[in-house]
Amino acid sequence: MTQIHATALVDSRAELGQNVVIGPFCQVETGVVIGDDCRLEAGVVIRSGTSLGCDNQIGEGAILGGRAQQPEDHEVGGTVWVGDHNRIRENVTIHRAWAKNAATVVKDSNLLMVSSHVGHDCKVGNRCILVNHVLLGAFAEVSDGAYLGGGSIVAERCRIGRLAMLGAMTLVEQDVPPFMTVVDSQVVGLNRVGLGRNGFTPEEMTQVKAAYRVIYRRGLPWSEVLAMLQADFRAGPASEFHDFLSQDQRGFVQERQVPRKAELKFIEAASGGPS
Image 1 (cartoon, rainbow, N blue to C red):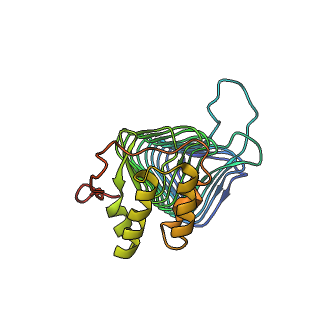
Image 2 (image 1 turned 45 degrees about the vertical axis):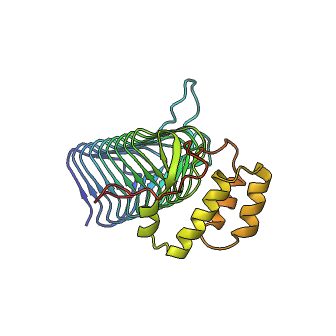
Image 3 (image 1 turned 90 degrees about the vertical axis):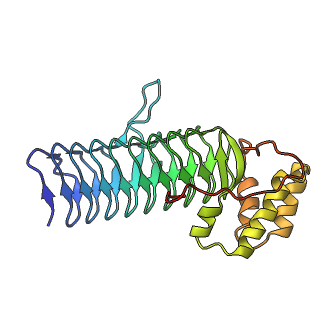
């Protein structure tokens, strides 16, 4: 049974599923779609053009579907599409796409912590974690399983690869390949804990490590790096490197400077924390 608090303002043209709970002082505008079992805590604002799937929990003060932040005036723009089973905490903001027929997308089972921001036209995959105060610039893309530490910033149009991890307060102005750990805007190793928690076998980890060396340690011309990745890593997780890097347009984050023969180590996450 859907429950709407007496102080909430819900437009009659909004579509509400079954068992939706809308808390005090919420605003739900015309054309909004809210799926089954969603819960909006006090003061949530859902703007026109926003669609939520099922079982999403939206924390106090969150605003979904606000206009793109640009210095010049523009048309109302596109939409926001949020999938299923997301936990969007207090004061999160997600802006709708800039152009008509475009969408800002947050897929399934993500955790967006307090005051994180998803800019217009961003794409966030599945099972991602954005810790408090993460900022995604316009058109940024975050692939499945990525972990973005508190206060990290992803610049406009940058891509974060699958299962990559950004340390707290990290600024990213270029693409981050899959499986990397980035601290202080430099790659410092592979996200071992994240890979292990996602079922990577020792053989797959070895393969990823070998591909890492091709990218960062061999000193090859870029055309040879791509050719070797394509030839030597045709299957398994390491095959993702060629697919990701061959589409690169902004350059990608470089490795922290280390001695030539230094041993490549996996980076351990802090005990008890997500990766």
